[in-house]
Length: 302
Image 1 (tube, rainbow, N blue to C red):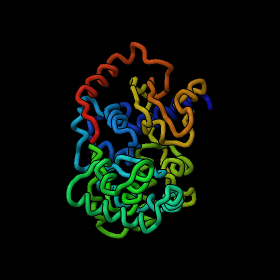
Image 2: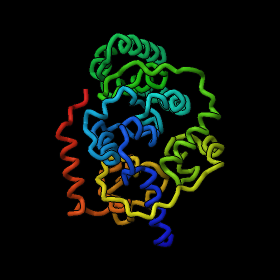
Image 3: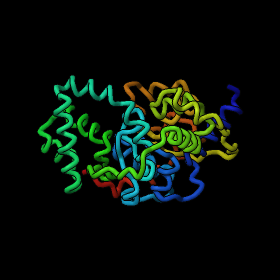
Image 4: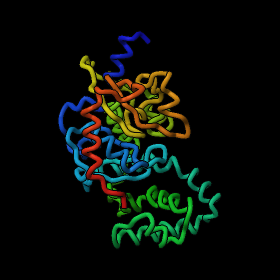
């Protein structure tokens, strides 16, 4: 790809991800724009929001409009409460077979799994619960606990709040029209990722390619962003490095193994004009200071 076109692509995608901070959004507004932010690392997901919101404080992220649950690719994501029902309806069924096999391998029968879901439902309706508290109620340990909690989440029983406490899932207001949900998925994904392809959306969402193609028919190219993107410090699993099937637009080949060494790991990076660089030099002084300010108020997850 010619260097000029590569730079245009990188800047367009970085701008779609709001890494240039065009305006100061509230965390819930930003998450609505990004649609779903990978969240298995509680600190990293907050740092991803910091990279896009100037002056964000730790406590601002604790918004009742935001929930964490297992969605795209069966991975924990932070989403807006209003987007939970249709994203849950699209993504939960894709994990059922895999979940059943894994629970069987862990010695959990189908009937035991059903009882566990009932226990979780009753417990979170009484009060917010930590993972440790639910594990004690379930009488489980090891990998059985997270798999049973994920099952309860897929069945619409529970989600986590931003403090990682399990609470009742938002009530689904009406049955979800799958075709309408796929169209909404494509529209919202492109708002934060264009230019992108149907294969990018399939890789990001974990849905079959045939399902996402219909919603991608009216793809619109992202507007050009001619201005350089400011230096940014991005955390592990940042959505900028997870939003497309191919990361080479942002990650030089010589840094590829350092950024994504395998096993689903995406490491923290420093970017200049949307491109990952080998080290954070003096250009990152303001970013380093802001990360330290943000983390100074960090509280451990429940």
